Length: 136
Image (cartoon, helix red, strand yellow):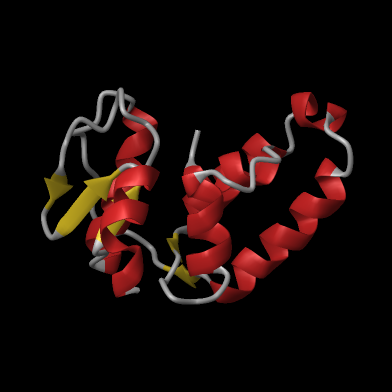
């Protein structure tokens, strides 16, 4: 599950994903790059019925998604890759290339066994937080 989705459906305010989203993305210390395809996937995942059991999930998610929409920079990738085992995850690499991203932060250790792709470092939330948070 993507870092953004994890933050929205958990209450763990001491997690690395939480720190990254609330202290770096929402404070606009780092830029959030998205594509329409990725945004649609986030919306679809967060609309799943399993999340309705979480108190205040829908109202909180709507608020946070609106915040993200306002600060994100949207790109339309022009390349199509077939590198990641989970084919749907290739869209993250495509976005990283199109946006010339410095980092791709993911908790998906199984499918993202690369350390970088082109000029983009692929890091876990913990690795980003421990090694790069002060630079941004």
